[in-house]
Image (cartoon, rainbow, N blue to C red; front, side):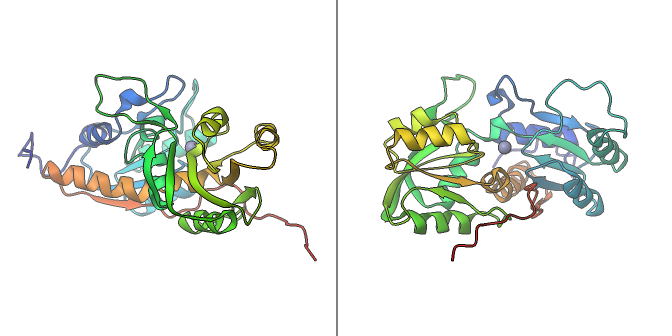
Length: 292
Ligand SMILES: [Zn+2]
């Protein structure tokens, strides 16, 4: 059991929470274009309740403030590009102002939480029942960080199953969203080797083909990459399963809440962590053709 470095402090500070997040999902793994780490918050403020969510949107900020949380950890960063105002005239400024006024800090763990074991893609593979998982794109060597794994995963199902049945498993394992999941391929075709990438993965088709996957599960598949991949496959594998971006990444939320609580306990701190169940997929309904 590790020693509490500040035995006089019964509660962690916001800066300690930032350290715990960095220990679980090292900020050094963040992609160059991305922004992770603390977004807002007073570093010395004590923290006892932390809310974890995918998106820093109004519904989640409401939940954090109404629930009396001291900190909000989200997967997506609220601020990614240059900002010259956080006044409440813009929605991002309004969210930040409300969080600051409400005494709730904000932290983002984005691409640093995608790649490691216990990261978004690894957890997506676990909930889909994949075995012998490997990264689709192994991480480049990083001496500072132990086993950073890499982007996406490929693994094998225990038993082969029909594409339609596997798509139902995907839909059942993820939060329910209006758009459901979209599938390209013969519903009865057998699949066993599965490639996946939580969040947007349509830049990975070369790696998916090289992995020998029967089916690729990801989000945000645009027309041209998806159409070209299906043409290239001549109707065969890899088939495609397109999920809501929010849904494929939500699998990280309950895991992250538990992992933070455990990491705090190892340092002798008791914090309450909650996985937000807000469905923050932006789509509200779909119209599907009447197949008579
Ligand atoms: Zn995402």
